[in-house]
Length: 190
Image: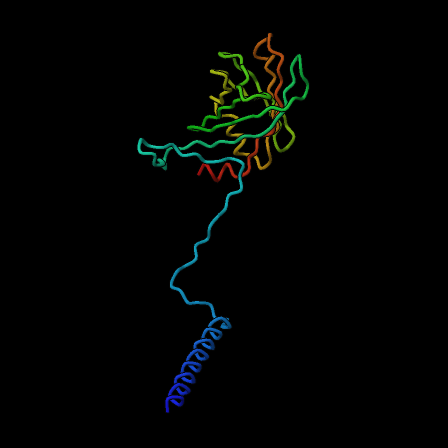
């Protein structure tokens, strides 16, 4: 009798395990998608070299209404000592004004003729070359008149730029050449 009870218990346990396993297999093999009440939202991805950097309040929380747009890219520099040396160009848009800083082969900012101005040569999408006035202060080139920003927003391709500092200062012989990406900039400024 004892063996009979053990056999019945073993058979019951085995059938329970088999039935559990078959229901798992049925769930895995089911091609039905789970039903949900959520609505998928379309997410627009903006491809841009420009990055939105938010200002932080005193608690370290971002302030949605205060931000800058930043971009960094490579260009070349030619002066009385070097020809075609690589430089890093960093640009920042704050309150619709573009600030540009040039870095040569070190992490130090290149010295610019403070208090002076220069006309950049800017080649736009249709091949036309325009003159765009920029001002120098604190080793930054500033787009006070917001003309460069307007050109960036009106173009679909990168702007080609030449900044000849000898036009601002007869003692300066540096010429910077670089391209400014326009990709995604309009979307980030919305």
